Amino acid sequence: MRPEDLLHPRPEGLYCPPGDFYIDPVRSVSRALITHGHADHARAGHGAVLATEETLAIMALRYGNDFTGSKQVAISGETITRDGVNITYHPAGHVLGSAQICVEKDGLRIVASGDYKRQSDPTCAGFEPIACDVFITEATFALPVFRHPDTALEVARLLRSVQQFPGRTHMVGAYSLGKAQRIIRLLRDAGYQQTIYIHGALEKLCAFYQSRGVALGPLAPATLEPENRTDFAGAIVVAPPGSLNDRWARRFADPLNCFASGWMRIRQRAKQRGVELPLIVSDHADWDELTETITDTGAGEVWVTHGREEALVRWCEINGISARPLNLVGYDDESE
Figure 1 (cartoon, rainbow, N blue to C red):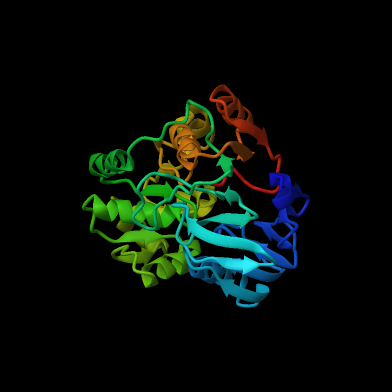
Figure 2: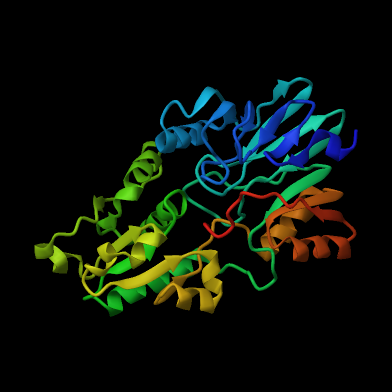
């Protein structure tokens, strides 16, 4: 069997003809295997969804309990056989419930990474490299310039700024699923035990993380009334990045905009967003992690998707690994 007979791209997404299912389809399909709960990978309206228990719960939180016709829980490491195709889910280290999907038939094994990272993250299970013949990897930060620093150092920079500017409200932009909870937990691990204020868009997901044993410490709504504007001086507020430029954010006590993202490695991006304190904290693999992972899988062939495909394809070719871009559409490599 050729790899493209087991998996190949179609307008709906990555399709497995023998098993008649799609991985992270961008359109409604009859059978969908979902890697994680971010909206560009997990959409409502499929006939049936197979995903980890956490991802199914996150989809229900976001879309309602009727987001699909039927649900099936994928347990990490356990094999599900569908029409002769063996399917196993393995931790991806991206966000809570995220998984790589391994499909195998007639001795051919392909692993679709979904989004992943290799850095330690106290809010989700760590990435596990899986030996395979073909590895399908994301490439969000697939350029040598992207080498993510130690997250503890970035959080220490944030805490130093809070000490240096006690009269200002530190507004930390962080995506609602995964990044926000990780930032809060990293602050706790760094010894910050004061109440952290959160935007209303984060409340359900933070509560969900806490229900799954991720300790986030004392949280409170970032509710601002005209008479309590100064109450937030010296406080940390975590909010979706898009809200930092809203009128809502400007009402806090001398707000100091921060943004937690791998894109903060690029100074011009920080400047364009009006970010005073860029925090390089990413939930995607950097260049070294991408190349390390390809090596760890032992794959003889690599398919590269949604990101900087060209550089990673070239690295594979230089290292004697067959590689090609998949050119899948519908995935957002900016919202990380």
